[in-house]
Image (cartoon, rainbow, N blue to C red; front, top):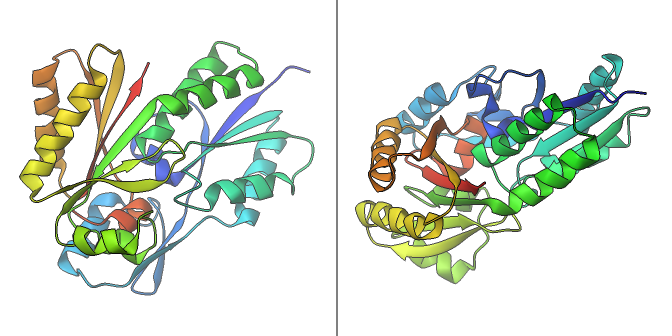
Length: 283
């Protein structure tokens, strides 16, 4: 029987904001703002969300991941559409339980091969894996070959995060750090990094936003020197800053391929407004 390979990706990827030429199923988390529920992207987009949070800085925010049952329904739908194999790309398992939900849902559906992949990343880091999977599916590659490639690729993705305040990350327990370190971090502009295992940890303590941005450029400039890479910049309510940062990187190398993308609300709840992230993939 000929393979028909489908793709599922979680909404944390921000893939909803991109124009993708392939049928993809997106499993979206629920955003709770002041006790009212919104399906990420469907009921509320990034722009509207950050506008609400900036105007109401102490508003009650939380998220709930897609239920295992809903993920299983997506698998069942794909099976009914004739798919034999499904690749599921999720946000880092260190940042969300979505990967675990994707694994558990696999046990609820028979007659289809499901391959959950922990991206160990977020946002465009997930998207890179999805785009590669699409390319390989179109080339007629076997599913096992695609999985092997994606697992190698994720080790070549690096992401740095510059938050305006740690308030949101600390409140939602998304930061891997000691409490003593957090005490000093809350007073400064921390530069964070997603580790190879997918956890988010403080990388450097920096006094001002300007210096943090300069340091971020310096770090990435050193790391990408002489390498063939794709770069991405993720913004919250600060797209102009992201575009300015893009210009800074283009001054270093005018041939750099740079994607500028919004951080979808369910991730923005944990990062907060004013956050910028810069990442790259070594090709």
